[in-house]
Amino acid sequence: MKFKMSAIALLVCLLLLVPTAVLAQPPLPHMFYGSLSIGGEPAPAGTVVEARGTNVTTGIQGNPVSITVVGEYGSASEPRLYVQGSNIKNGDIIEFYINGAKANQTYQFQSSAITELNLTIASAPPPLPASFVVTDLTVSPAQVEPGETVTIEAEVTNSGGSTGDYTATLKINDVIVDSISLTLDPGEDETVSFSIAKETTGTYLVQLAGLEGTFTVIEPTELSPSPPPVAPAPPEEVPPTPPAAEEVSPPAPPAPPEEASPPSRVNWAILGPIIGVAVFLAIFLPIRRRRRRVG
Image (tube, rainbow, N blue to C red; front, side, top):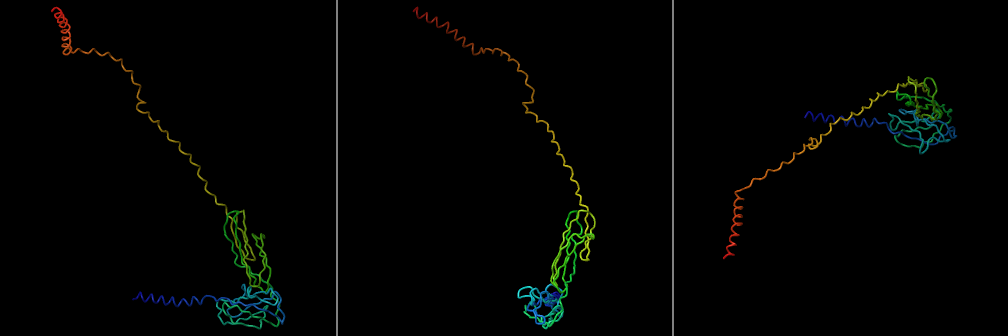
């Protein structure tokens, strides 16, 4: 039960925080454009229009604006006069100033609205001159090897009341090495970027419009020498394979001469009767033949 109540309490807290997070988001700007006349005459090019009021942010791109077309500020497309602020609310009153003098018209802020509003003023001083501020100097990387590139950047803003030209001049160790020229409208800002490479080791001082930074060129990293190549081990000597048994046996001695076979013994038990029969026939047959003849 205690766990269930804790989960419910957490859910309630999250639900209460959601509207707060949504309300914390700044509203979208209210945009204005229209005609502009001074003493009944179209305002000349270079006239500066600025919106002011409670919680209205000024000195930024889009507020103020310097007109480029005689008698008109902004247009139905771009550029326009942007009125915005982190805490501004719908219904807040906006006032308009021409070259620093208040115009006859006012308007209520409405987030994301685009309004055509014609501005008039009986008289206005000449526009304030352009004025430039350089901020946010960065040097990267802070440490390099000889010949490697270092990037140096800064933000240039025209905080004056007129469009003007500005030249950003970069110095390294009090010596001018590069410059960039640009043209900015009132409230406009732009980033300038330089690329520098040094071959000599040491620490270098970067100077730009009164801002300073440093970078250091260090000795190149020496790679450890590669070990000498290892010669392949000589092949192991393999003893010759002994020839087959018949190849390694010594030559056989010559065979001894064959001895004459001894005469075989006479088998008289067989031969005797044969000889006896032959003798009998040799003697008996002739005697018989003679008797036949005599008789």
